[in-house]
Image (cartoon, rainbow, N blue to C red; front, side, top):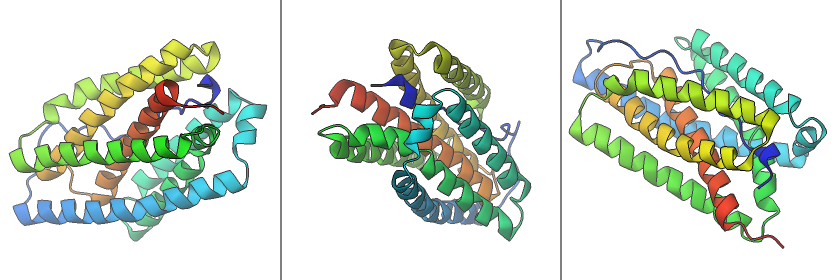
Length: 240
């Protein structure tokens, strides 16, 4: 696996609330339902963005500037995250979120291009997508059925997220394959736990804005998929 195409982890998550927000159960159910609907809709721009990135040969930018391009991408996604957060209480928040997911799809082009160069690349992409969906449904079910409050995980997850981001940025310069795989493996565990944390916050009233709730879950799914695909290509990729 060429470490140049390792996806840079994205964050931009709001700081976890210290406690619960008083909310009626029906309101929580409404937020959860709206979040799932918006999450499903937000996946469409991801597909469109990935398709456009492949058509425009976006990966050529990575080959021309293997360090600068990921840094610019990282900055652009952070900027869009702030836009979504600023507009979260208006109808424009939904539009900003869909715009963010579209850009995220474009930025999937490098890793998808690497997968496309493998004999079993299509199967690995499908497998990574299936594994991501399975993990999401498992974590969402645990949070919804048990209704346990997993907010205590927030600080630990945030520290882990910062360490993963720093390590990912550092590896853009050092290009150590073993470190790249280690980061991806840790990211799988980290963002799986974040899914549990995110859904739990909605169920227990800690997050009442469905735009921000969708953003948090989307970021976890996005990074989980990228990390799983990276690992699958490294250990199961078949070159021509």
